[in-house]
Each structure stands twice: as structure tokens, then as C-alpha cells.
Length: 510
Image 1: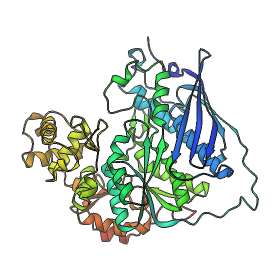
Image 2: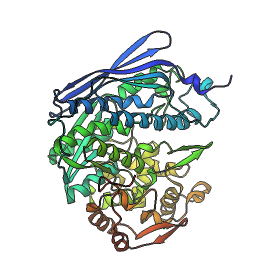
Image 3: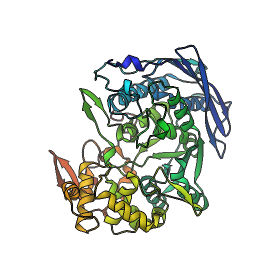
Image 4: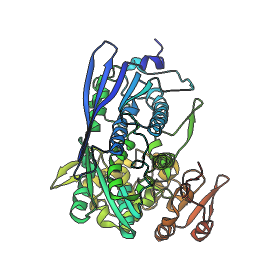
């Protein structure tokens, strides 16, 4: 029997409603109407360690409503109707519609067309079809009316601190390096979003260390992972034993970073912080095509397109935040090099493993997964000791041995450079697998700039010179893409071009 995309519309409706706003917490009910008439409900919660909401304030209820909607943006392909009940203005509605359509297309390509081992066999092998619209659900917004603009509501944009940076934080190398640099230069606010499941293990070491040493540290508790898992359990096309499947992907969802990001916004707003930082490197911005369908390689919420879209949304809302990554010109290997060479104490807190476990008062990586062998391989290639962030001698040996027969999840050129370094330093054996992968790509250790993935116009002018000066100390020069080739360029030349930040004025380029 051939499977069609219509066969995945398995719910009558999903309703996000009963939004409750308290000074330190917001919660919303997720109600799912099944085609058999049954309804099931669950509660999404964000909780804070300090007061961030005034329940009497429409703007606070508005932000809480938009936060509540983020998880639901993953399910536009599977419902006849999605109802958002709360305080939404036209800007929110436009943003949510666009984000849901983009997410529906990404899920269509990467979860339904792709070889997704979480799908039941009878739901695989969907025939590709280029569509005008991928979201099946009709979106309805209802609830609280927008207050009429009067003297009290017609407020000027807030005055935010340009030298303050909120960092969406975890125990990974990207957010640790972002914090290290920004803490050295400016006022850094590391904010950790504590999922109620095991994902918190990756953040545990860094959060507890920073809580003791960095007064701007904060934590947001959120049970979004429980809502995600609850939704998966309702889906008849997902295998019943999905929780026993070891995989580096989620069964369905792809709109995840924004769920955490919107949890950070109440703190950024309260603290009047101008800059919102998400740690993403060069290889997370991709725009590709499959069967005539444009997509973002399942990395949209880690791409510069996501940062720019959110910054435009903040501008329309009058919040005046700038969202960007300071790491876009860096490869994963160069990020780890700067982190371990300049901030070894921070690198010791790194946990890049989703199967970590607690031992001796800290989280320890499993030493068996793809992420672990990648981190161990990169640290050894950099002449550093993986034991500094918790790997045992036995795990290090096992990870290097695994690299002799397995690859890593990196861009081709990044993986080639890693295997080239490992072979050159005789850290792995030269066999057909490693020999085929290894190739020298000097640009991996250089600062890379191009028109799409890494462009100075995606970063505010005020941080460019100090940031690039720091990077220059650890990189092997800078290059810019020109007609499919990397050409050397000095950072002085780049900075002298003085390309305006896209969002420097209200007449920004869009």
C-alpha cells in the first residue's frame, strides 16, 4: 500500500490554551483531539528562579502566550486544526504561521521522506511531492483582545545595554566558548534551560560551576521534553518501542531551539540586555534542495537565517534585541581549539554527550557515542588531553579505535581535516577507511567568510574588531569564498569594508 502525506493527519485538533501567568512561572494546557473522539491533555511549564512576569501586564501575557505556542509548531503536518488561545497580536500570528510552515516543510523532508527508523514500516517510503504548502492544519487564534493603544501603551522602545549579552547556555563547547569570550570582554549572562529529562546532564557541570562563580547565571526549568514525548506516544505512525531505539535524531520534532530561546526572553527583557547569543558555527547554515524542495538540512534553528528571522520579529515587536552567533566564521575544530587553549577551566566543564552519567559529583561522558569519539578525536588532534573534561584513559583508547572504522558527523571538509591530523600524528592507524577520509583542508583552521554562512553584516559593528582580534590569535589566517575558491584576506581588509549590520536601523535590509 502506498503511503500519502494525508495519511499522517492523525489528529482532529491540537489546542494550546488555559495559559496561566505568575511572577515566576507560566503554564499552558496542550489538549489533543483524536479522530476517534478521545481527548487527552498535558501541561507545559516554564519556571524561573526570579520574578520575570507581571500577570496584570498585557505585554507579559503576550510573551507568555507566544512562549506557550513554540512546542506546537512541530505538529502542523499532523492536525486538521491548531488553536492558539491567548494574547497574540498580528505580529505574533504572522511569525507563528511562518515558523510553522517552515517547520512543516523541514519535517516533511527530514522525518517523513528520510529513512526515519522511528516510523512504523507501513508509514515509510512516502513518495516525494513538491507542494505549495506543507502545513495541513488550519491555524486559529482566539482569546484575549489586543488592548487599544493609548498613552499608557504607546511606549518608546526600551533602552537596552549594548555591552550585555545573554547566552543560551549548555555544557557544549559552543556556548562555553561564547561565554568565555563575552565574559572576558563585556557583561555575560549565561542562562541555562533545564529540560526535565536527561538533556540536563550535559549542562549540569557548567551550570553548577557558573552558579558559584558568575552572579549573572540563571536557570529556566521547562518540561518541554515531557510534552514532546507525550505527543510522540499519541502518534500511530511511530513505533511503540521508539524509546528503545538509539539514534542521534528525534522521532519527529525539529523546532526545538526556539522552545528554549523563548524561555530566555523574559530574563533578557527584565535585565535590559541587548544581545542574545546562540552558539552556532560555520557548518550549521545550509540551504539545499531535495526532489525540488528547498530545505535547511534539518538545521534551520541553528542557522543564521533563524537568527535574522528572530531579530526581525524582535524589531517588529519593539523589543530591540539583536540575536546572533559570534562563532559563525569558525569550524567545530577551531572552536574547540580556542576553548581549550584560552579557557581550559571552562573546557573542563564540557559535556558533549547525551548519554552522560553522574559519578563523583559531576557528569561524565559515556565514551561510546559518535559525539564522544568526535570530541576525543578533536582534542587529541589538538594535542590536548580529553581526560580534562572527564574521559578515562580506557575511553580515549576506545574512541580513537572507533575512529579507525567509523566516521563523524561533520561537513566533509571538517571530517577530512580531522582524520588528516589524526593520521599525521599517528593517533589512528592508516587503513582503507581512514586513508579515504583523510585530506588536508587548511581552511578548517582559518576564519571563513562568505556571502551566506559567515558574513560580517550578520553581526553588529560594535563586537567585530575585538572578536576577530581574539580569533586571530588562534586561527591560521582568514579566507573568503570567491567563485568556489577560498582566497586569503586580512582581517584589517574585512573590517575596513565596514559593512553595516543588517539591523542597525529601522530601515534594515530584509
